[in-house]
Picture 1 (cartoon, protein in one colour):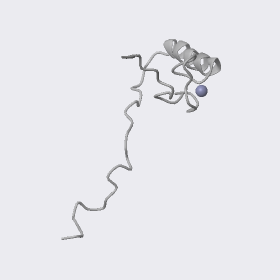
Picture 2 (tube, protein in one colour):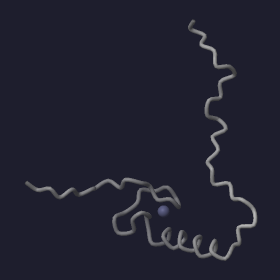
Picture 3 (cartoon, rainbow, N blue to C red):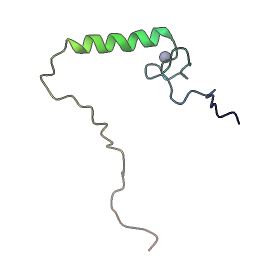
Length: 73
Ligand SMILES: [Zn+2]
């Protein structure tokens, strides 16, 4: 029984550009995107978080219904 699972398809896209990530540069699609991400981390390390960062993906469009009533009733 060959229990080795080889994922040919990348599970996630490149977080930088959204292209399919490669196994060589996982989770990025290329060394360039990996470098961009690294620079983001490095530059962010020098930034003092004075104000709260909005990292809460606010879904303002979620549940855009005017009312909670069911028109089918
Ligand atoms: Zn990329």
